[in-house]
Amino acid sequence: MATPPVMRFCVVTLFPEMFAAISGYGITGRAVSRGLVELNCINPREFTDDRHQTVDGRPYGGGPGMVMMIGPLAAATAAAKRWLIARNAEADSIRVIYLSPQGKPLNHSSAVQLSKLENLILIAGRYEGIDERFIETEVDEEWSIGDYVLSGGELPAMVMIDALTRMLPGVLGDAESAMQDSFVSGLLDCPHYTRPEEYAGIRVPSVLLSGDHKRIERWRLQQSLGRTWERRPELLKSIQLDSTSSALLQAYQVEHEAEQ
Ligand code: 9WO
Image (tube, rainbow, N blue to C red; front, side, top):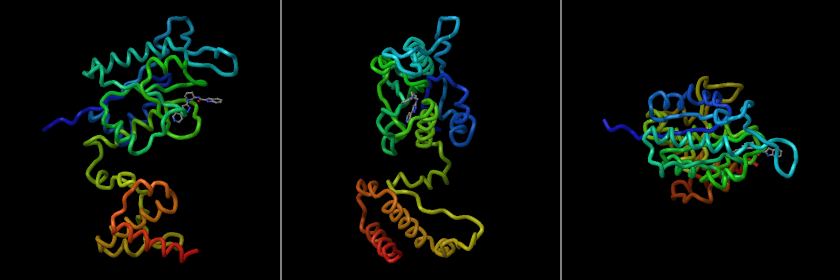
């Protein structure tokens, strides 16, 4: 049997324990225990040389809050590179990514591109930010997971690892892959239902009980098209609809207009 390629993530973080949230649970946890993904954390605190293990400093120019110092960050990043190389990574295949609100917005297609890389070092910042000279000298790419500020880059790093891991061959089971939600087609997902057939007076759409698999597939596609048009019309602009999809969407729109 051909062994699938491994994707390696090495995270530079002051809070390595947080990453149990992905290494210990669910699909990402299984990918780690099956060896499809390798995950390691390096703590800059272990690369300090003072008694207090200082990793932050007051900002030049004044102001509230603290900034992560370049020394421990750079030393931790060098250790992350050594770990990857010890795991057989080619030095020039390693990308250093900083998660910050100043980064390029992550979306499905950038996640697909990033999931083709083999060795990522993710930098999770804390405090008010990291010394800009670290970004200049060590960071290859800066990515954002959305326009909001968090308390640190750990959750965004985990979001990125989760999104990329799901895209690796062999990670999702057959059923999960077949379902490969919405975004693969560029559309939002259709509604889902399970037992009971009626809840709060709302019945499961009769088409889903019909057993007519062609009709069910067409209904689901129509729901995906209709919801994308209603909720995220800008996503439709980057999709070329075939004649079947155009007709399904038009029918949905006619029905929707009748509802108003
Ligand atoms: C803190 C802050 C306080 C007052 C005014 C502005 C401020 N900005 C920040 C800030 O950006 N703090 C960051 C916290 C420092 C780096 C790590 N942090 C972070 C990363 N918060 N949010 C992210 C993030 C990363 C990727 N995508 C979305 C958010």
